[in-house]
Image 1 (cartoon, rainbow, N blue to C red):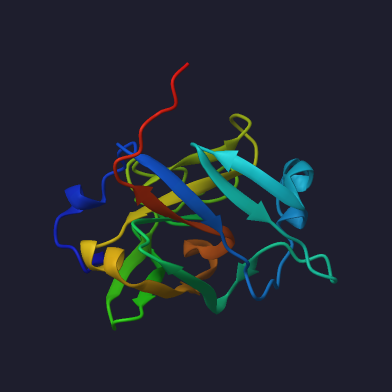
Image 2 (image 1 turned 90 degrees about the vertical axis):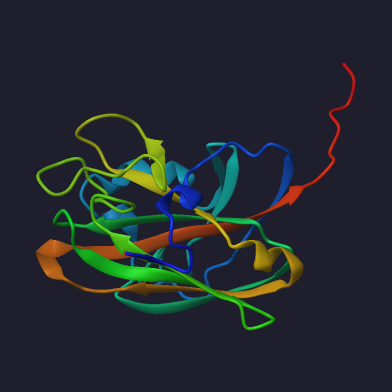
Amino acid sequence: MFKGISLLALLAVAPLSQAATFTTLTLSTLNTDIRTFTDGAVYAPLIPGTSTFNSVPFQFAADASGNTAFARGVLDIAVGVFGVTQAYTLINSGFGAFGSNNGSVEFFGSNSSYYKVDLIQGLNIRDHFDGVFNNTIDNVTAVAAFNIGPGHARLDEQIYNLPLVFGNETLNTIRFTGLDLGAAGIPFIVAATVGIEVAGAVPEPE
């Protein structure tokens, strides 16, 4: 399932012990509009604009054709940020069957460093709509982001704690691969953000 780090524990979500700086990323291609999905009208207030979920900012965009997300295929997201320690995505799926491998998210560094995480239904990806398809994530490698309640559309946030080697180079590219598996899941990505942990940050006095 997860490649690049053998222990799932190393991928666990932990609040950043230091201050962090974030860079929201631009998706180079959008080919679907999540506002047309089941209950997709709930997304309309988010697009376009920046929203913060779990202390992480995300940039929502719409292209000239009204597309707001990328699905069914491979998308390379340019990063160009040095010293990235964490990355975050908003990825859900249409439909979804527990345990299905719906694709992957890969990270490419300037010194040939590489890291890959598979998108597994029930672990770090689930149906965008709280209905009859997979409604489970592990709440560790993926957590709820935009969620107005049961029976509605939602967005989930995936958290990637990158291997330490990425902290000493530039993260060039994040690659999203979404497999069209029909009822077993059709993943889509809406936004991505990277973070740099700032060592030695001291809070300002009150």
